[in-house]
Length: 133
Image (tube, rainbow, N blue to C red; front, side, top):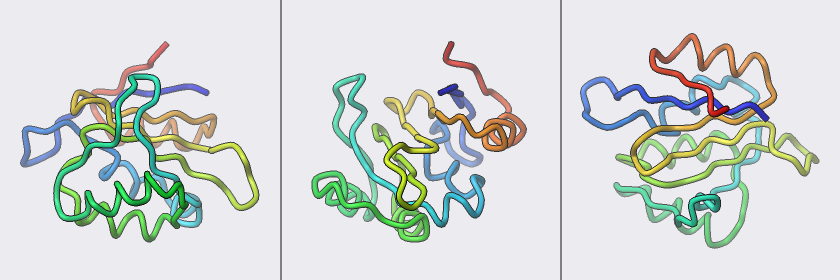
């Protein structure tokens, strides 16, 4: 799947955009999806986040339970920053995620998907978007 890297800084913060700011722009499909939370395996990193919601993300990561996009958005509302994390969205009954959001060491955020609408939306929403390939 194509991967876009977002290197924008958050408005009003010195932190790089992370999955908390990408989730809302993904639209209705993301809200209906089932989301799984994990560390970033390809870098051998465990989930790392700050703020009150971090404990909820850690619990989801350990339990392997999936939550709706609504619930994930509510948890993200209590998170200050996602430093390392991978968030995979599944349509009902599908065993393969349609989009994966990753926070990479507070250095960039990745959006991996075959969904052309999502790729275009990410490219138009953020200023510093690079391809991973």
